[in-house]
Length: 355
Image (cartoon, rainbow, N blue to C red; front, side, top):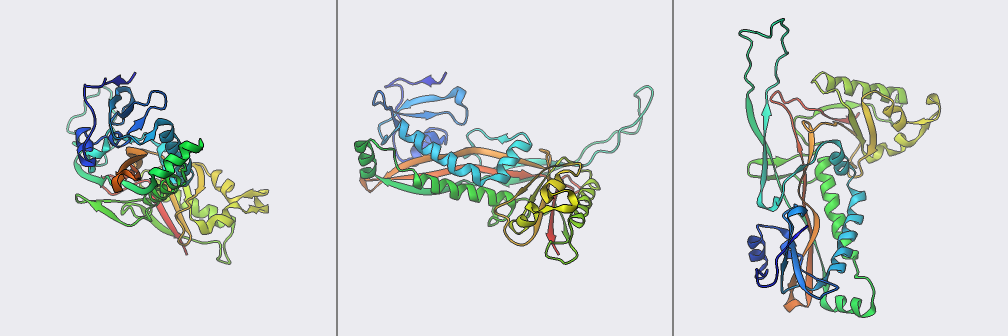
């Protein structure tokens, strides 16, 4: 159960910066709510850990708790369909969670050398065969992805007076904008972002990815068999650097009509179905924000290759402007990905373009 702090034991107040610093950068400090049953004003601080949540009285709430739930529901509903690549990544490998991620600006990890082969013996005593793994450091920045929208105090008052739901269109639009940017970051098509000596890469911008070309469907020599053979060659290239799957495949928008078309030589199967029959390929999907030319991404389902990093789920915070007559909201989150290669710069990501 959440810990309850009773009135008099601490009340949240002050400027936006003060509230964040006083709450250890917990964005819950900027989500003041009015209890729809009791009329009491409060914030909930949990720093990403609901089991340790604290309810703190406040004096600056404008929205009721049910209105906050409407906004949160609108954000999730709008964001989920836009994040195919990122949601897949969250299901492919354990998510790296950073509790209270607002307190951190970068995430650093080690890159290890590739170990040699194990030895065989009858007594387990192998002399002169010891190895020491060597390490170096790599990292990623942890940017906050955000988009603002606003409501006026009058809009909130009219909604309550008429008994209608709060207009959440602005929240949905802001969430969609954030989700699209998260998807572009994952695909590698977002504007390059760097901080602290580290750069955020996606699948198509990661310097250590395998690259190559394959025949595109507009070529007069192209056939589904040719495409299948190209994919087998990609899997072989990945196997040559010790990455054997399973893999997920993503294709750019221009591939769509050919991926969905049915081919009589394969008993009416679509190209998606044909590719999913290849051992090692677990799924084939379209990457909506991979729009430029004929591109293919192949990603191994392993946290040593690609991993979702969550410092803050998408959520809404608020503050007041113009004497409280305008309520400014910001949909924000720290949602990114960590791509890895070993010290030989080998990874399980392939990016092929058309020729």
